[in-house]
Every structure is written in C-alpha cells, then in structure tokens.
Length: 245
Image (cartoon, rainbow, N blue to C red; front, side, top):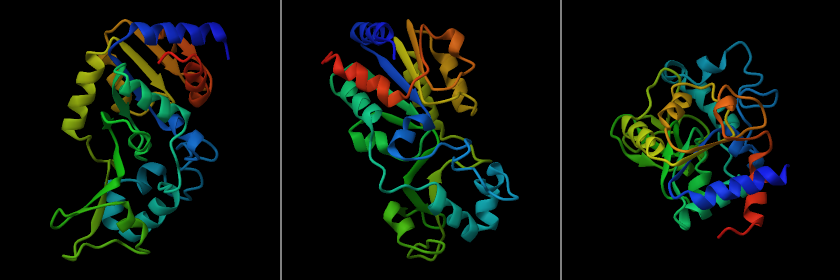
C-alpha cells in the first residue's frame, strides 16, 4: 500500500468536517461475511434458480419455507464481528468527522461497532415483522426457528430486508441522499457500484473530495480524487496508525 496515498487520505480527513461513507459488501468480507457474486459468494451455487429469483418478494411469498432455508444458511452470519473498517468509521463519527454511513449491507456490523447514523438501504437482518399484525421481532426469533417463523398471532414473520421486486424505504433513501448531497467528502468503499438504485446515490455528491476504496475496478474510478485497490480494512488500519485523533 502506498504511504503517499495514505497520507493524502489523512490530509483529506483532517481537512473535512462532513464526511459520508458509502459502503457495500466488501466492507464486511473481512468479518467473514461473503460478498454476493464472487465464486464463493452468497449467490454461488443457487442451482437452477437465479439469485434474483431466490431472494425475491415473489419467491418469499410463494415458497416461504425454501426462502428461509436459503436465508438462514447463506445470508445470516450471527458470529461475525466488526472489523478495522467498521471500527475506524465509528471512531470518525465519535470525533465529529463522519456525519453518516450509507450502506448496502444488511448485517448490522456498523451499529455493532458503535456507529449511530447509519442508513441501511437494503434493510437489516436484525429487524423482522409479522406480516399480519406488525409485531417486531429480533434476529433470534429467526435463528431459533427451524421452519417458517410465526408470530404469536399466527402471521408469518418477514425480514425487513429489501428483496428483489421491492422498493427502497423512502425515509432511508431521503436521508441517504440528503447526507451525500451535503457532504464535503465522500468515501466509497467495498462496492463495485453495479447495484441500482443504490449505486446511483453517489451522483448526488457535489462536495470537494471523492475517495474510492475497492479491490476491483468500478465505473466511478475516473471520478475519484484518490483511489485505493486494496482491502478496505487495511486502508483504515493504516490510517488509524497515523493517530489523527
């Protein structure tokens, strides 16, 4: 990793007072949570069904038991812990540098690290509701049931994650857009920027510094002032070692 670029990132962080972080699956891979479309990802070996089918609203409604079998096995990792990226972002928020995190992840690791202002575009595995009465249930209610989880009223409990065929939560979307639009620095990390409409949110950024951290190339690389093709945890660990705060 280039020390010059790390020091340039440190300068940007030091100069900024309204940083927003926009992140994807690559932020959590270092916590042992696989990404979605790589050879060993969540959507590998789904058989005859495409990922769009098996994690869709229609499939959930028509094949709820099969959906939950896949969901528990491939999308929930209860032992995962925050990594260096999650922890440093929480520290940035605590000292007043980072104003918001906009994430495509559903694992809740940013909150586990201590971050408070997190816009979860695709929902969270930690929030579940009865489709009949609206009663809230935590993750343990999903994990402790081997079949389709049911509410006390008899209704089916549905995860508050955005499935294919469902729209993003308008309040979360508005908050994310507002945060990005008013940021002086946008750090994009761990995302290939191919999942829409989430990836399109970076077009609302009109601030001064755009930093991109992703192991593979993205369509936004040319727009970035500073580009890292490294593990995001390693970048933030190197930044933390400089003891900015």
